[in-house]
Length: 269
Length: 360
Image (cartoon, rainbow over all chains, first blue to last red; front, side, top):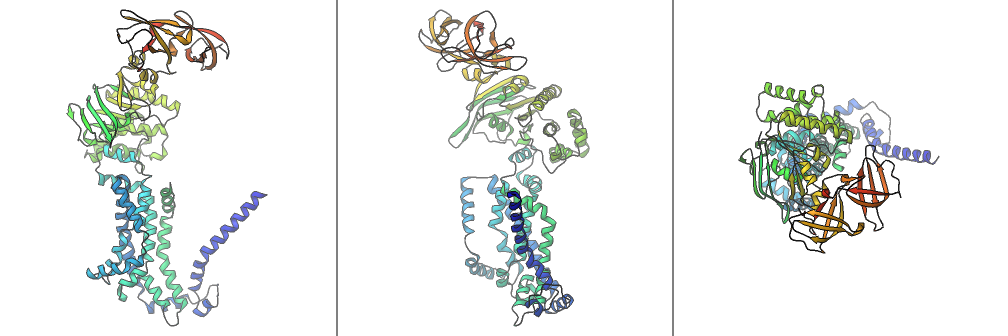
């Protein structure tokens, strides 16, 4: 009896958690099919305004350009971050010394510095490099992600040292061990990191808002925010834009879902 | 096949010295086993020979060439690891041919060598499987196959059987002995299992605290240990050490009395001139050397009897509380508490001084 009650309570709690997680998405999708007054009145049934909302959105923003900009930034930043963070994580764990441990501790300490404190110096640096209003300015500060370096370093602890030894006996140099052994063996870690980095870059708002100043360079996240800043926001259009903006991250997540879970479990071992 | 020479080889991590001046000669085609307790430095020494650890001082010479600075792949060695270390993202065939691919060997030659090794090890049916689809024994054979295809001068094995169950371990031990015979290769094998060491080795290297305690053929090391550590480490069940006192020192002979056993007197032929009457010494009595009759007589009471079928290990004591281990094939009827007499041929007894060194 107790066991059954326990089970019911677990399912009840999980149902609440699932509802809290899923409802905003559901409401987002339903909202995209409704007009603004219906959304504000709390209507949660499908409407007939989806096509109208899409047309209005395409009239207000250059959707293709926005997607191109966001995709370009997210893909390049993700690729570069993976390279830098995995190389750093590998090096910090495999070539451990007192000095490298201290450097790593220093890096971790820097995680506590809020981005707001770095914004102005970063802006000055980008201005001096004449990179304001370029995608490069958005990408560069994200590449050396301390959190992702930490994540790779922790995951590298589970990389068997005997594999590296075997590869050395087989005649591989360090970069070859990294490329031909470490990368394929740690693919779950890479998959999980890809999702985390891609989402962070796709959803990046504050820094792009500061450095991207013209419409042709702006990202989808900035466009959604600008739709909301109108005198009377059209929530149907906002919902359509937000739904479209969510699709790429959802796609990446579902493609890499299995590896994502494995990667997270692996990093906790 | 090449031999090896280690000369005054040292390894230190900061101020901690883990290998302390090892000198060793290994002949071509010899099967040498490094054996010793955990932390004695046997695996570190093997890794130094492989080039996976730098050496702090001394010289490692393989096939007549100094190899101190050579990369692992340039030393003419192949290594089999305890955890097999198969590349999990490659098939059995790719695992076995990987090193040859990096060495620039032609594809046809790689296929030929891999197929040849697979045939030797009975791996033909597994060539397209992934490591995770193999059993422990199969993985071990693939790891050995990966070593064979390189046609190395020296094979290095780092506790290769320790992850296998007891039955498979015996089976693989036989396979390894056969393989050594068919390849006629120089093999250096690390283990903490003295049964593996005794059964496989042409030469045993017993290590303790980063030093070599004794080198020699297995039976020579068993019968004629240099010190108490070697006598205690080699042999199962473990040798009995009994405290004794020197009662007489003659020309070429030393007599001792075993105080715990009614002052049983044992005469040793010894050239040692460091002992005098009254000195404390230790006598080593191998459990296997006890017999039902003849020689010295020990009156004992059975404390515990382990009947293994083919033989019985009897743990027996007397009023002093000291226990002796006796291995016998005639002890099936012995019961706990039973009084009996065990006999020991005095010429098989070993004498050690107060520092644990053998007196011959």
